[in-house]
Amino acid sequence: WFYFSVANTRAGQAYRFNIVNLYKPDSLSNAGLRPLYYSTVASRDERRPVGWRRAGEDIAYYTNKIPSPKKGQFLATLTFSITMVHNNDHVFLTHCYPYTYRDLQLFLNDLENDASKRCHLRRRVLCETDAGNICDVLTITENINRVAGGGARG
Picture 1 (cartoon, helix red, strand yellow):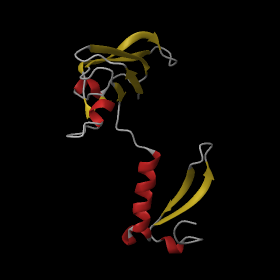
Picture 2: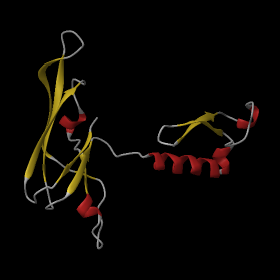
Picture 3: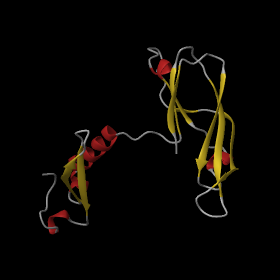
């Protein structure tokens, strides 16, 4: 897994990335899976804003010569190139689509507001994180009213 950004890009310039110290002996990258790319310039295009998209060329995942903590094994490297589209862009690259805290909260709110699902769900506050975010505990069961405390969030 990886998530990083590159700033002050040059349009038409190919950038090569090598991510080392990966543990899996093989990857879907060798079967065509490409990294995700997000351009802040493209996302602000008023005519047609672009979000996350798959990108990358010359993608390979292979075992390297760095010994793994597991005896007798070696770590792996993911390598790929991205040709930048815009000058002075700030782009983000990641293995999978980001799932934010806000995405999670919206999803949980939708579950609580759906009567057909609410009867199977109890949501309680466990604690607050150092960042001030609520950390929920979910109980999911056949019938929440049979579980001690019943009902939704509280």
